[in-house]
Image (cartoon, rainbow, N blue to C red; front, side, top):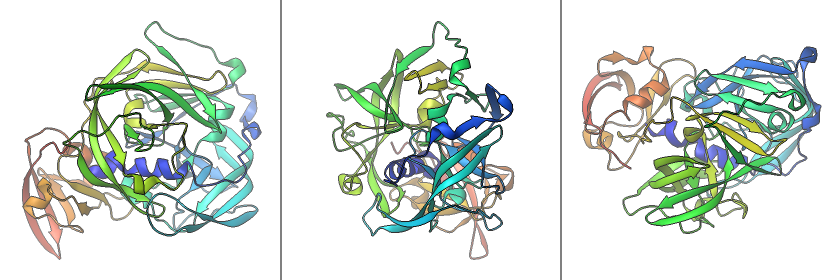
Length: 413
């Protein structure tokens, strides 16, 4: 199921250039009650870290913790939610895709709370139209992205296996670097972290500068502009990579032979190569060749240390997981965010799902005899990436009729 795999490639890319407004003031974030450390459990949605955020006294909303975001961004507000924003002004946004710009609001001097953390004078950007459809595609209510003020102000530890994030006051951070940990230098430019990685593909080896993007679920994307000769392989799959601010993002999905970060090596890494015409409007700058996302970072427990310009990587139990892409051709989402009612959003051309006759808008009833009302969207995604050659039995409702399909999974990438 491709949505879980690559959707946030496009979101991460569009967010990096959403606003040219004033930068949020990280100096106005602090810990309540004179704490030096604040630790909180988090939700992982498609390997993305989700934290509860209260804006100007609102009900808690779910935000993705994103090191690649430019400002705190609200993509949707639930029908039951009410958010009061200060000093809002309308702006026009241009983004990925090929259609016209869209309207948004930039709001200044807001109060943000994340449990024991609080920030004043914070900037918030609000998209007026829910073009991303974030909650339905991810299967849980999601309201937006937050990041720069937190990463600039605190040292942030993300434990992907225990699903815990810890924020440290830099002056009181107690370093416990183990022998096999890797300390990776990062450069902070305009509030975003960049690191160097070495990529090997088709006999070409290049060291490139990449944006570290914890808010992108995909493993990696490489720009067609300045990727130093790393190109998709001949068997790359052409696909719609997702939805940008201004329409569909097209490109190719392929693999690179090896990605080396410090002394850690990852093999057969699935990589997206967006088309030039999808990103030629300023979304990519000369500083980087692409981005690295959560499908790589989840294989480590990480410490993001902006004050000392470094990233600390500690290999965890996910490290040896194979990189796999959807083997069905299905894009599935929830009908109502947060409820386990799923439907087919799209069917890829030349895929097992198309070949057996599954259609968009088919409502999923069961997979391999398991009723989907006990499955999460991530669990459903894993069922379509489990084993090359496996036959999956899918029961759906279409126009009130129950229909059964058997599709044989195969590697599309």
